[in-house]
Length: 319
Image 1 (cartoon, rainbow, N blue to C red):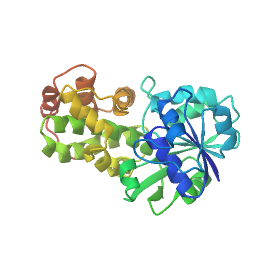
Image 2 (image 1 turned 90 degrees about the vertical axis):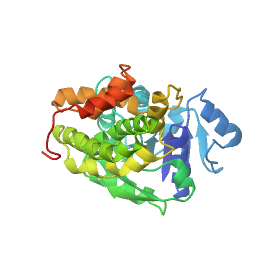
Image 3 (image 1 turned 60 degrees about the vertical axis):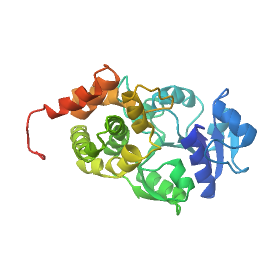
């Protein structure tokens, strides 16, 4: 199978490495002028892995689309609209798009598959979400992930094509829940980093429990299944997001508390804005998301943001 991977950051480069390892022909795309692509062209390495010589490299988007039967996309979620505007004019008929990002468009609250549908409504699209860090996979530590799609044949084809001893895939059956769950776990990751920065790590258990309930309520209001919040896309990804030293969102929250800059991508920042839009639209209270937003966007003291959660009215745990 011929697969094009769009995005040559750490995760995109890993996906190219992984899919080549699964026996597929792989072409990896990076923008012209990308420092990541320049390094890969020169050394075929980044700071985590080395790419096999069989993996092609290109900065030509037309070549990328023409090559791949499947287009695996791994870029910033907030950049997807611009990418789709370019891809839609290149002839996507017969292609399958696989979104490997976890986010929601901050300005609109749209899920990523909804953005794809605006530009290519006839193209079959899937998401690939769940726990896993490049560093762990490269050490041979396996994990479980989810592939979901509105098209049953796409799910079956992708799970069979992508499965290996390193990743066990499950078939998703709730696209809304898995997209919202995968994106929102990054916001919980920021909250976890705040707790670490405040030396309040013991509260992470409560954060995970209440965070999952909060997101479950939103998923249900949007028409998804409550169970998805407890699946691999959300709760199942908490270890990698809430505890792992490799978690960008957790580290962003921790360093923000300490007043230190964080230069890497933390998808949970724009996702917080998007979730609050969705909470307002669907009339769902999202207290943890609001606390995170008050800290990262409104400059509230992190102790006050956390303390505000304790001043909420008393209620039953499950209602």
